[in-house]
Length: 182
Length: 424
Image: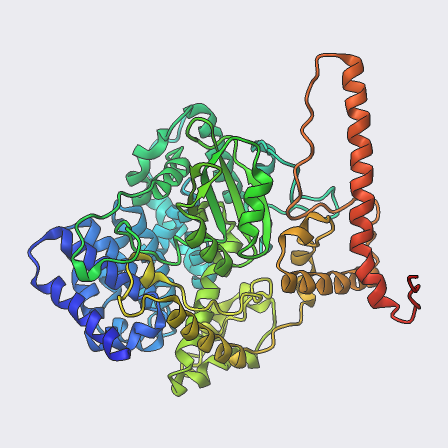
């Protein structure tokens, strides 16, 4: 039974790499990302180097592919082994880049992934100043899902000092912009 | 802030079809989630009114996500976008076809929620039936009609909040696309109704679940996951999680060690999300019996691993909210949940009497409640008067019946010694 699962996942990975069809690529990637939700598949996914696959796709042009890949990372990054692997592979940087995506789901997945990847060692990276500043902006968003998530990020993963620093920074960058008139 | 109270503006702005569901007459202090959250939810509703019908805000959506913070109406656009049903994918390769036709979509914890939005409910006054149907899948904490939500003609939109994410999952899976009084329901998660605290708990629960699930195979991780046992000052987490990481050398800081607020702790590690399935299923894993057996196997071992986090003391406030007083709740809850609920209620009572808070004057109305008999205007004073009379009489009778039925089991359990009258 477990062999069947591995083979099935292998078939998906093979199709992703072989296919020319953009549509099939999206479907297969979505499949893999959804399989990444279930911890039972982690071992197989590592074996098939799906983590690298997800990380590679982050630099693709296609908005949908990026959305699915970061979704997959978000789904599997809580596992200790996977977490270490992503951090080793310098995965934080492309994930941070996802924060500036125009796709809402991509941004949401990226924020959660950053939270889940935060360890004492990776904290420097995952809560770097630009990230905190970005979260400050998100936390004011009218989009409730995003503002909730960013608030959790600021409250649970950043020090008050970091938040203060980011706040000051954004104040400075706002210098020169006229205040709204009454 | 830490409490998972539904933000108050919603209760002011949304028109409830049924009865007020959760906010009590004052004994539960209503703390709204945060200033920010309040604002945004108000904004959502205000823009709803301004925008008129349909999904006016959907366009601004992309920009929103990019972080333009102050654009208004994004909340709604957001709601519309991720609730819009995607087209079914027709072009799947044979080996990737699932049992049911599905769209191409990736689920993450962000998309899931204890809140379910149910669209396409025929406007026939069938809220009771709807809620009963959903309550089959688990205890419902709140429900109400969203009269302001854009809906198709002759249909209504409802919001149902389950106590546990897993129940919401199952309910969504079972009820989506189901025919209900002649119309197809569209059920989706509605995480935009969560408070900050609920979002936080959801993320924490996922963290705990993964920690437990991976423990089973990994003895190495086992050690780490036992971390939370050692230090569980309930309230410390919120104050400064980073302070524990102060000594990096110790390197025992693992975010998974955050002790969770026990409000969330009742989620006993959901049995594997069926996410792989949601898009497609393995042909060979397709039959349910295989699935369930795997799940139950995992469940049992999960419960063995569980630390007993049962002490509920510091969060009495949080739980006070869900004290079930009204009898509707008996109807909708599975028996086991009902028993737990009753036990908790009892503990609650003793606790409150110890604290000395008087709860007598204001009746706490929380949780599912049946809709009242609709008050129809009969265009005639005398007819109206007699109708009111009949209604009040009906209510009286119904109340007395349900009260006796509720009290009975408790009495019998309290005094088992009372001799029962023999029937001749």
